[in-house]
Length: 112
Length: 108
Image 1 (tube, rainbow over the protein chains, first blue to last red):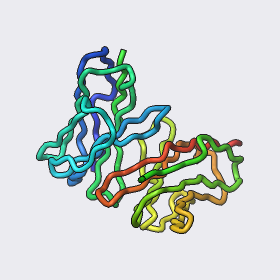
Image 2 (tube, each protein chain N blue to C red; image 1 turned 180 degrees about the horizontal axis):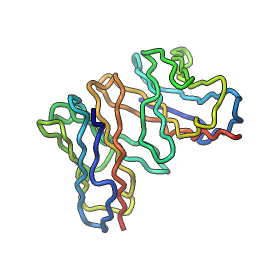
Image 3 (cartoon, chains in turn green, blue; image 1 turned 180 degrees about the vertical axis):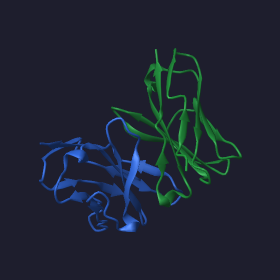
């Protein structure tokens, strides 16, 4: 079966712009989580959606938001981009959290 | 506070030598623990879960609640084991907290 698909793979934006990243989970998976990966901070949890509801949120500013659609696809939005938002953004899906997550390849965002 | 600590940023081990990647956690309750691996230019993937008591690619990990540890071990390192390894904890509300990762470098 298809894995977790993230689009686009690469993105370059300028400061102040906004960006939307997309994630299609494995068919049947209802939990989708988003992570930011940077060399300095490692993997940091952004938020988790389950059945279109945000269940958990990490310690990121309100510029970072997300949503999940009825088909479990999820989008993540970052507004007013800052240089420090440059990172690899990973999406992961799971049937339920304690089964472990399957990760997508990520979207590499560069803010210039 | 919920926290996962991987004390080593980089671990270099000779091929054939034993490997131990350390992971300590802080969590009030019964944790669900995982190890994830990211090989060069590949996506992050689940290596093993403590509840399954699996051995994957020769790696095992035992949960020690007394020491709050979940160290990853392999008796004989192979060159293809070189990768970034992340220890992770799943909370009751399905949030996953990752350690900062340890880069394992297998020397020939």
